[in-house]
Image 1 (cartoon, rainbow, N blue to C red):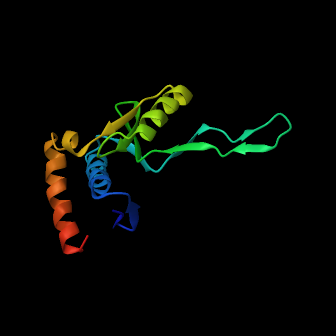
Image 2 (image 1 turned 30 degrees about the horizontal axis):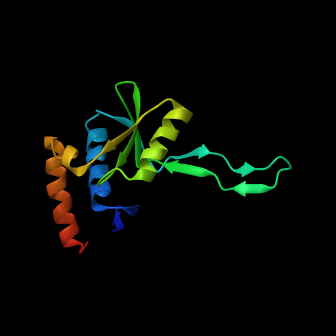
Image 3 (image 1 turned 120 degrees about the vertical axis):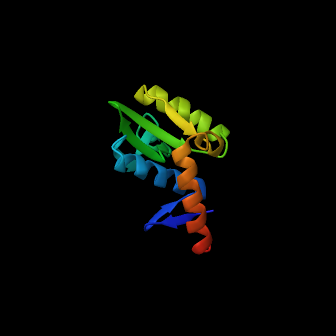
Length: 130
């Protein structure tokens, strides 16, 4: 279910809540350079030997990217890892030599700050009829 928060659209309530959590980490100075929806070409447009189009490119669009203690993180929020995601995860590593950190709601709820943000966002969703 798509969700709009602060004029930004998210694919799920969890992705939206995780964004609010990351924004709080930015305010606290724990992470920097927070970005959303960074697009990567995993496989470029394919043509045959004479240049005739064969296949469209394959892209991966990250949910979030940020820097923490000098390390650049690429993060995807998922309810579960789909077969398509697993393939794109491997292609992303092949192309960039970086891993995608996949965060689930269950994993995120181990963090106390996330739990606080989660409560706040549940109230926001309720008040706004989401």
